Image (cartoon, rainbow, N blue to C red; front, side, top):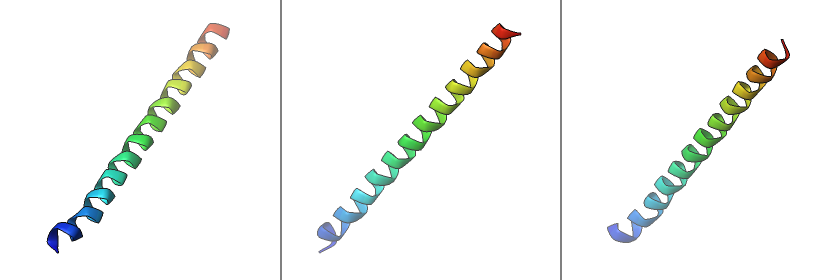
Length: 45
């Protein structure tokens, strides 16, 4: 029983890690886009 009960928990952990990775990737993309905007502003000025 414990083995069967452990499977959903493992899936939840994997899903949580995937969501964390997705959030981290999204944050990195946002920071990169902000840096690009700053470069454009600096090049313009």
